[in-house]
Image 1 (cartoon, rainbow, N blue to C red):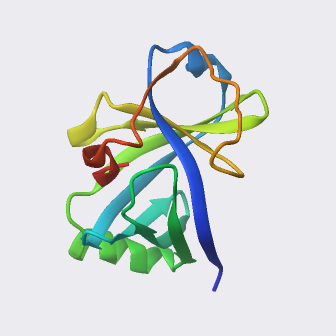
Image 2: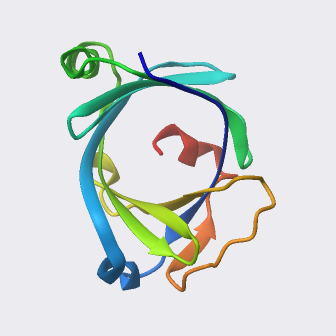
Length: 149
C-alpha cells in the first residue's frame, strides 16, 4: 500500500478572473467526502479519476500541517463516499504551470458552484513564488474554507 505522510506546506487563494484557463495543461474530475472530523483532524476519502485515497489532515490554520495519505481500492472509496461520507464535494482540478511551480486550480460544482480556488505546494513555508495575475485573496487563514477545500 502506498503511503505519503509528513508535512504538507501549501498556500490557497481565491482565483480572480479567467486568465488562467488558457494555461491549463491537465484537468480531471474529483469527488471527495469527509468521513469524520474533530477540532484536531479530518478524515477524507477522495476519488481522483481511477485512483482513490484516504487522507488524514491536521486541522491547523496556516500553511503547514500534518498529512497522511493512503491509496485504497476504487470500489471501496465509492462505497465510503456513498454510504459514510457527509456531503460529497465535486470539483474539476486544473493544473497550470506558472513560474517554477504547478498550481492546482479547483473549480467547484454542486453546492459550491462558482467557487474557484488555486493552491500551490511549497518546499518550505517562506518559499518565494511567482504570483500570477489571476491570483486573488489568500484563504488559508479562513477556517470555513478548510471544510470544503
